Image (tube, rainbow, N blue to C red; front, top):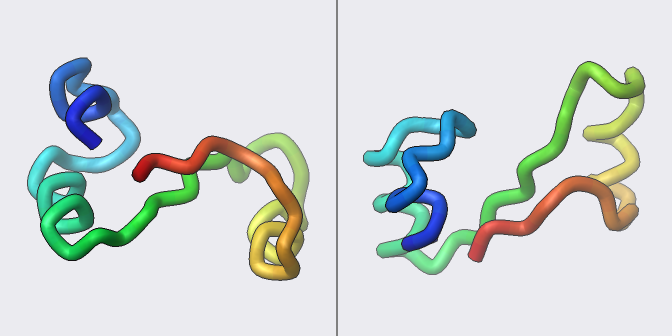
Amino acid sequence: FDEAIEKNLKIMDTAAFALCREHHLDICVFSMLEKTDTLSDILKGATLGTIVS
């Protein structure tokens, strides 16, 4: 989380990153433009994207 906040990555706003960090929530970052069923695959346990923790 600290790296994402420091680098000001445009994944989501800084306040959302801070809230996730405070509540120990991991974030899965992935592209929804690559294929249509990416979210479904992730929910089924596929290892896609990057985990921010």
